[in-house]
Length: 481
Image (cartoon, rainbow, N blue to C red; front, side, top):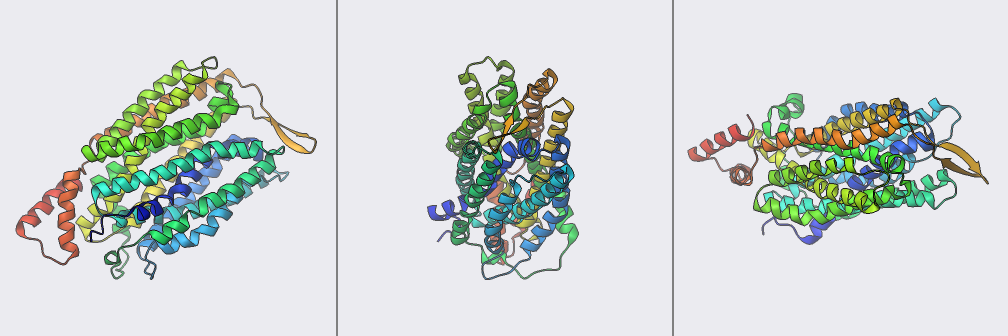
């Protein structure tokens, strides 16, 4: 039996686990900053500081969690115990994250928000670094990983659509905006937690990867990966592209609400973008199988960068169709970028194994997660500072018949101009950097196939022939040095 070929049950069971990773990220990216400024009522600078502080904390905890996971040995495996542990805490942490505290002191509200965000961030780290690490060992086949990633991104994007459309509708269903956010937190806490039960039930970890624990080497775990060209280029592709995602996500609600004057349609605009991400997935799977994952990534990045130029011709008087057309094209581009990155990362531990004969899936997952969080924090912090510095006027809070309501205020021309520039120019500049490193990314399907043949011999205890030793040296030069 070929253990690299997965059943649909295994693919779906793994894929639904990313309902949490994809959906929670969208809720936080689209709604958390505006929730802090308008509902919890802390300043934009303090709101951005909350996220920045949490990422400094993550910079310490994420690598430690990755090292712990790689060194875990249980009857359930290395990854599944952490996923099982995380299920109830996903629910609790998400509810705490969107609980609208109303302490009289802004600093007291700020302190609560920091504590809640650190709690949520810790659970995200524990669950997602183990979830990501699990993907690298479910299958070792280059194209099967692309298929697995497409299903993962399908469920992630469907969850993202729900996360883009439904939170605001839940909030609007309540006359009191605070009660609306409490209900939203309860609903999505359960929505994100429960699917991981299926992941734990269906995923199989490879026993041959659970070798006896060796002495921990800090240099090998946390410094040597950055000497490996394949990992560094993949990481830079990822960071440039996903900082662009973060910048657009954190600003788009403000942009639609205050510049386009279509606040009630903000969730539908983001929903349209995500729907077209899903629609794009079969195309990128086909393109990747016929060419490479790098080609699929480049295609998505070029489409996305081109689409951002369209934002300059859309204004408050533009027909609704123009706004939704723009969102659709952006979705077609981001779909390729996101799916191909999640198909590329499971290949990285194979390159590490070629060099060291050790599997370090969780270390790589933790490093990727760490730099993703740090870059996201910097992006959102910079956006929040720009919002505050450009004169953002937050809504006035009114209590009508016992229900708290928010009354939007007119915004300055400077603030509206900053929104437009961030939305259009920042993603284009970041995508240019991502394309630069993608063009040079060295792991092709042909090289991965050659590498897998060598790794299969090593795992079986078969000594490499002189020809194979020569081939390994060539691959090391192409992929690592």
